[in-house]
Amino acid sequence: MGRVLALGVSAVGVALIVVNVSFRDGFAVTRPAWAAVGALLIVLAARPLLRRRSGLAAQDRLIADMWAALRGRPHGWHATDPVTGRVVAIDRTRSRVTLIVRDGAAREPAGEQAGTMTLYLLGLLGTRRPAPLLRELQPLRQEPEPITWRRLRQANAAARRAGTTATASPDELAALHAQVMRTAGPPGSR
Image (cartoon, rainbow, N blue to C red; front, side, top):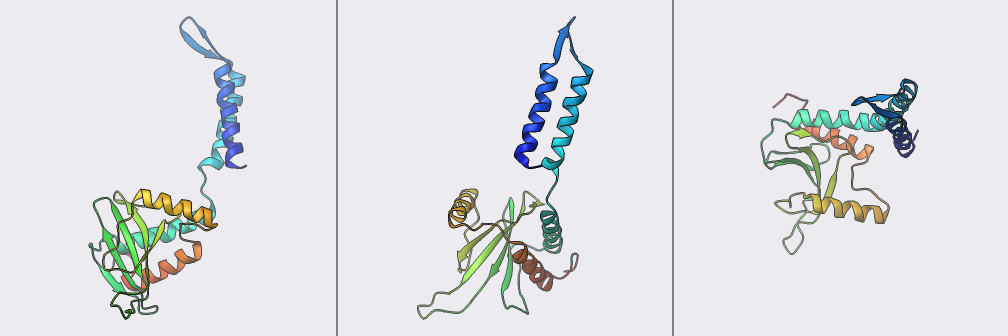
């Protein structure tokens, strides 16, 4: 059952309960059969609305592993991945934990660095973010611009227009997980 259909069925269940309520002697009284049918419709329709897709559950486990491995790392912590040569860093602000992966540290003739860095919003307000993992590409520089909700909305809108997404794909998330585990070590190691 799709989400829209589930919302419609739950709305019908609520309507069945509300329509069959009458007031006698200052008390609300419902017809038990219709109330039971309405409640059954609400419960059946709520399952698809509350259930997470299996792909997102697997992504949640990968994000939880990365969160556990990076939880105690301070602001500015960074390490170089021995396999890919990319630099993995953490940017902590008062409300966010951002994972930064820097690619291509080659110097241009003008003295500027060429390449990109990808920012992943890993945690928010002291807890990890659920899947899908939000990401933003920025040109390589010493200090990244902080991720703002406005820029994330703009990136999502631009990605939708281009037919892509502003979230990490499952393959990208698996590669990022492997990279973080190589650089930060398993959860609890320092």
